[in-house]
Image 1 (cartoon, rainbow, N blue to C red):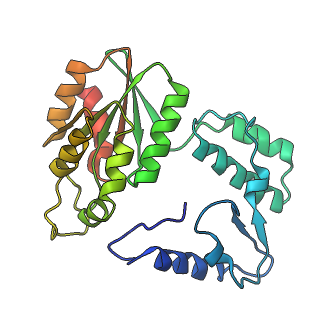
Image 2: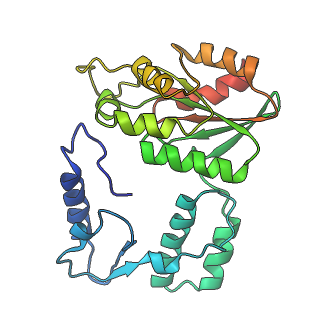
Length: 248
């Protein structure tokens, strides 16, 4: 999960890696750094570290039962097992605890049904997160069409990772895009959610731009049914959309 991210602060992947390296160097004596040796972009972070390093890839178990779908959650489980093992928690306890873990706030969080459609809420706002969460949703509901409601987070991220966003968003069956959440930024590039929609439509994707939560809610209530899964994603105030959906 080490990629070029927070592009308003880090100029490139190397700066992100350096930040992780500085974090790893702060691990105290008796501590450990838990990583997946098989993950890309890891090696430069680990070079010259003097603290113990545990490869959580060795703890990966495809047969581990989880309530949360997706390969990303299987990898999270492996990391948790590695950390638990290091502090002396038995594998049996770890396995049972993970099997019973029901997830956390805004990580593929089930919110209810709307006209028979399953509605989930998720914090994901990076292309890799979007793609992984959609893949997990398809794993859990292979027969449902996925409607993705996405609010891009920051102009710089949307501009810098534009092509990756188009690729990730396009893995949904239907894409509903809200205006970009500015957070701490001014729009100096002229990037808009409409430009993402235009690029998706050029790839023959079912994509549409919306200007407000209210417009999205009307569309969901009008078009979603028992054959659908509605996935609301983003790190901005889109977190309030599902509550509005069930109230209005």
